[in-house]
Every structure is written in C-alpha cells, then in structure tokens.
Image (tube, rainbow, N blue to C red; front, side, top):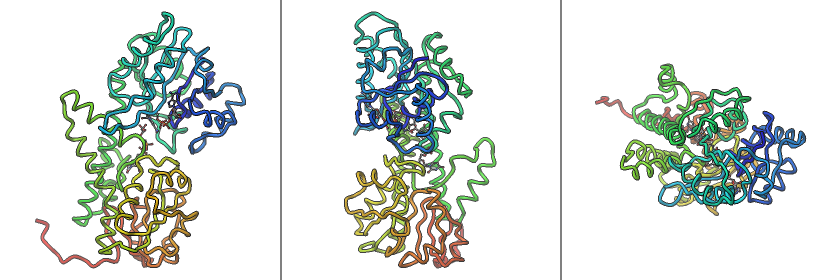
Amino acid sequence: MNIAVVGTGYVGLVTGVALSDIGHNVTCIDIDIEKVKKMKRGESPIYEPGLEDIMKKNIEKGRLDFTKCYEDGLKNAQVAYIAVGTPEKEDGTADLRFIEAVAESIGQHAEHDIVVVTKSTVPVGTNDYIREIIQQNLFENMKVDVVSNPEFLREGSAVHDAFHGDRIVIGADTQSAADTIEQVNLPFGIPIYKTDIRSAEMIKYASNAFLATKISFVNEISNLCDALGANIEDVTAGMGMDARIGNKFLNAGIGYGGSCFPKDTSALVQLADQAGEPFELLRSVIKTNDKQKRLLVEKAKERFGSLQGKTVALLGLAFKPNTDDMREAPSITIAQELVLAGANVVGYDPIATENAKNVLPGAVTYATTAKEACQNADFAMILTEWDEIQAIQLDEYKSWLNEPILFDGRNCHNPTKAKQNGIEYHSIGRPTTQQQKQPATSPN
Ligand SMILES: NC(=O)C1=CN([C@@H]2O[C@H](COP(=O)(O)OP(=O)(O)OC[C@H]3O[C@@H](n4cnc5c(N)ncnc54)[C@H](O)[C@@H]3O)[C@@H](O)[C@H]2O)C=CC1
Ligand SMILES: O=C(O)[C@H]1O[C@H](OP(=O)(O)OP(=O)(O)OC[C@H]2O[C@@H](n3ccc(=O)[nH]c3=O)[C@H](O)[C@@H]2O)[C@H](O)[C@@H](O)[C@@H]1O
C-alpha cells in the first residue's frame, strides 16, 4: 500500500521505517527540512538502537522516502498516519497545535479518498475534531475516514516493539476503514484489537496511566521499605510471582520521566475534570512521582547536612537507558535541586549529553567518561541504568571518588557487595550500608 507518515519523531520515524520494512511504500513528511535532508541520506535524527540499519535498507530498496512537501507525500497515499507531538500545555491539557496544523495540511493537499490514522496520543474525542478540520479544508468532496491507532512503543526498544508489540489497537467508525488498517498491519503478525474510535483513544491514556500508577505504587512501597527495614527487591519479587500482578514494571527508582507518562497522566487528569469525573488516584500518582524525583537529593542532604561546595557526579542523564531523550528526565529536577543547594554538579551520559546541555541548569559541567565525572567528586549518583554505567565495578568508584559514597537511584548494585567493597551505598528501598543501626523499637 502507499502510505504517508506525517511527523518523523520517535514514533513517526519508527512507524514509517517499520511499515516500509513489511513491504509498504512509505513517504515520511516533516516540516523540519534539516531532519528531512539527514533522513534522505539514511541518517536517523534520533538515537534509537537498530533503527538506522533498517532505514538505510528500505531507502535502498526504494520503499522509503522523505519530504517536506505535503503535496508530494500525499500524492499517491491511500493512508496517511499522523505522528506529530502532543506536548503538555501549562494547564496540563494536551496541546493540539501540531495536530490541527497537520489536519489542515492533509485537508488542503488530499487529492483522493484517504484513510487518516492518528498515531499521536490524543484526548478522547480528538479524532472527531481531526475529521472536521480535514473536511473543512478539502477542495473537492472526497471520502475521508479517520482511524485511531495509538502507539505503545517504548523509546530505546522502539524497533523491537514495532515488530513485536503486544497488540495493535484499531479504533474506527466504519468497517472499511478498520479493514484497511488491519490489512496494513497484518504482516507484523501482532494481535489486532478492533474497537470504536473513542475507546481506542482511551486505551492509550488508560494504559500509560496504569503503568505510571504501577511505578508510583512501587515507589511508595519502596519508601516504606526504607522506613521499616524491608528490601524492595525482595518485596517486588514476591509480589510479581502472583500472575495477577506480574513481575514487569515493578522497578523502584527516582520516578518516571520521558515524553509521555508525565504529559499523558496530566492530560487524563484534565480530561477527567472536564468530564466531571475527577481522577483523584491519578493526581496522587503524579504527586508521588514529583516527590520521588527529589528523593535522592533528600537522602544526600540527610547524609551530609549541607551540600554547599560538595562536588557530585551524576551518572546517566537521559530519562531511561538507550535513548538520547531528555524530556522530563528525573536528572533535570535532581540537577536543579543540587545546584540550588550549592553543590558543583558534573554530568555524564553515554549519548544524551548534547540534549542535556539544553535542559539542565547552566552551572552543570559535563564529563566525557564516567571516570572523569567521578574524579574529584565527593560522591556519585546513578540516575540512568545504562549497561555501561551498571558495568562500573564498585572498586572503581572507590578509586575514583574522593570518598567512596554512592547514591544509586536505579538499584544497580548489591548492598551487601557494596559493604564488602567498603562503599557507603545508598539506594532505593534497600538497606543503606555503613550507617549506624537504629536502636530496636516496637513496630507499633
Ligand atoms: N516518544 C514515544 O516514545 C511515544 C510517543 N507517542 C506519542 O506520539 C506522538 C509523537 O511523539 P514523538 O514521536 O515523541 O514526537 P517528536 O516531538 O519526537 O516528533 C514530532 C515530529 O513532528 C514534526 N512536525 C511537527 N509539526 C509538523 C507538521 N505540521 N507537519 C509535519 N511534521 C511536523 C516535528 O518536526 C517532529 O519531527 C505524541 O503524541 C506522543 O505522545 C506514543 C507512544 C510512544
Ligand atoms: O506513550 C509513550 O510514549 C510510551 O511511554 C512508555 O514508554 P517510555 O516512556 O519510552 O519508557 P518506559 O520504559 O515506559 O519508561 C518510562 C519511565 O518509567 C521509568 N520506570 C519504568 C519501569 C519501571 O519499573 N520503573 C521505572 O521507574 C523509567 O525509568 C522511565 O523514566 C510506555 O512504556 C510505552 O508503552 C508508551 O508507548
């Protein structure tokens, strides 16, 4: 099938590349001309493992092209995907500016019947709005079907997820549109779930809100473990053995970040308020997450009294491993709090440093290796569990840091081993090593 994909960010580019790889002819449209030039050369503008190889392969096979021009991109397209951003507005609602602009452009440039598929995460009811905008901009009377096809890929494993996702959700109002998009996706061999448009839109928000809830829940339990002397890893291992709970997505840490959980939870809270059904549970999830992002700095303040003049190495800056994305990364809050407390902050990330420079406080300096960040630092904080950072041996910290003190926001190391290696080790929901024991008290 001939397909246009509008917007070539993490979702649009991966979608376009994957659709071309299963045999479709895909033209990706983006307004960013520099990006388009780069992609035409087979270079990915984002860091996503495995993406560039498949991209190059399909460009060579003549199935994948890039353009800035809607007219060219839509000329032969039977299907057009919308994959532009839906960032958070100041009031927490989803900003639909980019969606509106794309819908206008599709309406103005469509030359024949077309199925428009929304991949972007949009509030319930937005696909009806998209259809209206397109229809208002059409020159001739032609058939435009709108389909909601939310995306569930994760950054850092987006290519794998595109080919091995758990489900493909297709929300449509007409059987023919649903069938067309089912045909497009059949070669992936992923289970397809068909529903109406509004339910599909809600599946996306509900899924992200549920996953965010899981993380905040486990972070609250980890703080209780800290307070009561239990070990979060043993607790989640025991919980996860219950098939109804499952053992995935139970890692306690420094709070969720990224381009989606924070904005999508806020958008759903706003949507619920507008619908007159306030979502108090989700409000608490967000509040817990904001608190969790500050936890590591609180622990450091408790340990040192004052952080004034201390030098701290931040290891890992991206919101998760295997991505260069810094959107809503916990490292932003942590660096801000540390700078505010008078600390000297040295950051290191294997890939995201250039993006980090745009969002971390200006006072932060950057190292080109983890070792360089730690040398002359009074303590280190692990913020992102990149393989490279997890692989740093405890005795290396001992030789690099002024004092062997490590705050591990991702529970990468074993507290017992840390103790054996003479490291003062603070982690999340697990015993701190080399601290004085509290006197025995009754649990009640
Ligand atoms: N990033 C992720 O992992 C996931 C994102 N989503 C959703 O997918 C949507 C896209 O997210 P990202 O890919 O992260 O966005 P992004 O911000 O990385 O990319 C958006 C792209 O759209 C382009 N663009 C903006 N206006 C345009 C226009 N009028 N015409 C053509 N191109 C235009 C931009 O130049 C940019 O390349 C959002 O709604 C997001 O919530 C869903 C699942 C996963
Ligand atoms: O809508 C989206 O954009 C995407 O959002 C998330 O994907 P992503 O944000 O790329 O990454 P995740 O692996 O979900 O991690 C999100 C955040 O949660 C944190 N996290 C994740 C899992 C966990 O157990 N604990 C935890 O703290 C991560 O460190 C990260 O900061 C969802 O997992 C995807 O299904 C969804 O498509």
